[in-house]
Length: 296
Ligand code: PRT
Ligand code: ZN
Image (cartoon, rainbow, N blue to C red; front, side, top):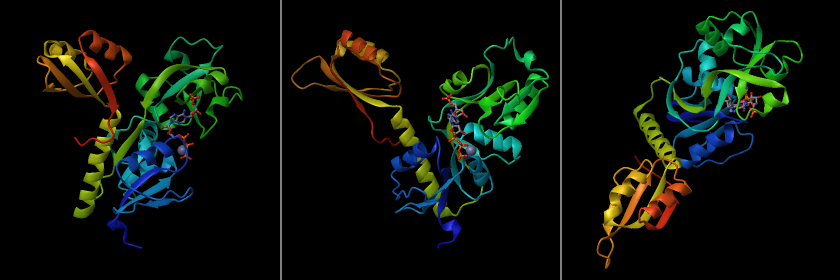
């Protein structure tokens, strides 16, 4: 086995909501590894990188303590680890656009709620006591927090608490348990974090290359390439319609004076309505294609 400092370590969730999307992101940067279902450590084939698969609750700690160099974790778990384990939180270097959810306070549907003051003296069950405590302190609300690591939504029915504070994505769990969200404590999504531990020159380069590629993957995910033909006179109007496009490429069309081909990268969503507006402005043969890779 090579000494630890010869390979970069990236921590990801082993099983759960972030697991698949995290591995996919790493694969899209061009790294290849064999995925054994229960492997705790995936060795990248042609780069000195290991992917460590752990519980999401451990990721922030591992990166903070230098056990891993990078990690993919929910902002909620990162923030909770910072507040309850009092770690020096690793830096967030990218928001990854998956694992979106929000930490919310919810009360039973049949209970009246007129604002935060109604939580004064309440007992709130939560999977994120550190974040909830900070929120309540900031708002000047004194309430008791009952820490629960799972099934928080059953707490009111079991008379463990009168309110809950848990992660919500679709809201179906709240509905199914007769609860309604009344306050948003934190918006969250998966983030890429980096620790501050020193690396040798080679690994610094490996990390920099990986991070550049992650930027490229994220940029290409949100972008599309659009192509069309148009009369030159419509160029200003077309440039205004194109969402998030900088400096389109304009090329004259052979044998068609006054007509051009317009190519552009759109960094925002392109809807059918956008294409219809382009057509009304005079564009034709409009093609919208996904971008596979992008280096920025
Ligand atoms: O085993 P390990 O400790 O790694 O996994 P875990 O069970 O602690 O975590 P997991 O896989 O449930 O969640 C990992 C991360 O996914 C969280 O830290 C969040 O950053 C993110 N995430 C996104 C969510 C949700 N959406 C989510 N909906 N985490 C949990 N939930 C739960 C929530 O707790 C509630 O029970 O889903 C239920 C609510 O979902 P809806 O869709 O009914 O609103
Ligand atoms: Zn967990």
